[in-house]
Length: 504
Image 1 (cartoon, rainbow, N blue to C red):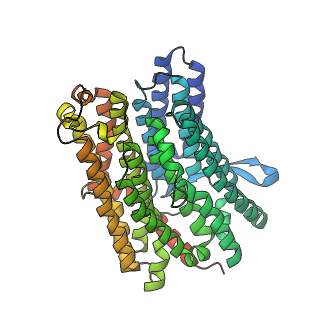
Image 2: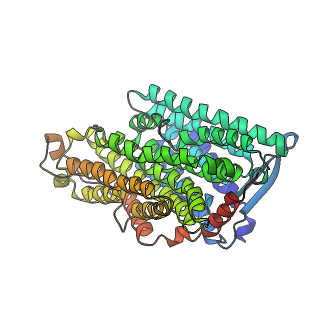
Image 3: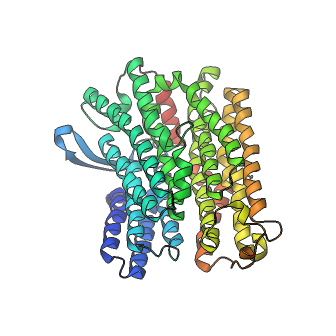
């Protein structure tokens, strides 16, 4: 029964149409707008659950496919489908959107309906990115995402929001132009925009290198990889709490997903030849950005830099594969690198989203993000302090939390590729612990630093619900990662076979 329903279209278009409906409710009745937004976001998540429960983990082919002719002249189709990579990311998007709506419930007083609508439309577009199997459709969703995010930071952001929005827009837009050129080039070769046709397209090494760099420019800005990361701290600092959560939890994952869906399978030879470049950039992100995070005075900025360092792990896990294959001549341990990268993406979605929500809780009360303005928060907000310490530990990669699982898998995999790669990757755990515990120590523990902290009220029921859901997700994935890893085994093995078979 469920397999006959167009589930993917429902989870894409329900939040988009729901967002438009919220706009029509308008700011005259913010209560109705919020209630409608929450209902739509919960419904979207519930409709998305069968994608997991009815998912066949034994096949690598696309599931829940929908195929409708779209632009016949260009041979472009409205073609959707999911595999072991995209399905967990769709559920993550739907889950985080519920929390963002709850997070903005009391905090957002200005243009409430527009705020909620922007997030719902954003949710639909992001799920569209993960589900699209037509490159043109993917590109439309990929670019359309910029608009709600641009508005979220530009309208509800901080004092330097105009600078941050423009920087975010220009960086991401510039990267994706090159990707569009690559997609058009491949369309001319294949006479189709089907992503799966691109996977099979025979390309010379020169073509592959150019296409690989085009994808690298498009997706590295999204991840963001060093040196095109500078837009992220600015965007995070200026964005409202909900914007930061979505940016960290979902938008960054689109870059990682793009590598898995496009760069690796379409240009396997170029990716294998240039894997040293990505590994170098990933390790710079992991080590250097970790050191930059240590000196931050702004809580949001610190967590933003921490996000860049953690996403370095993801790209490292994805590209370590080639080194393993060259060294050992086998794929043992390679699957672990890619799965570790995927687990890290989902886990980082929960942890960084949770940390930004924690900063949001403090900011709503004190209207300051500076670490020096806090101290001794545990004395007045003990329940909040427990949550913050848990998410801090998860961010540092404590065993038993989700942060440990992905990082451990990537480090295990990188040991097989080379000692120094693994050494530098391990180094980040020390740095991650350093800046996260330093943040927790200065904000949560110690004596009460100023009179404002002494007046703080502990978390409300609304905030407890939001943080408890994330805490449950972080602990469950940390103790029992199998529900996530089991759905991607077959997809990962299929990708590995594909990328180790040369196109030359």
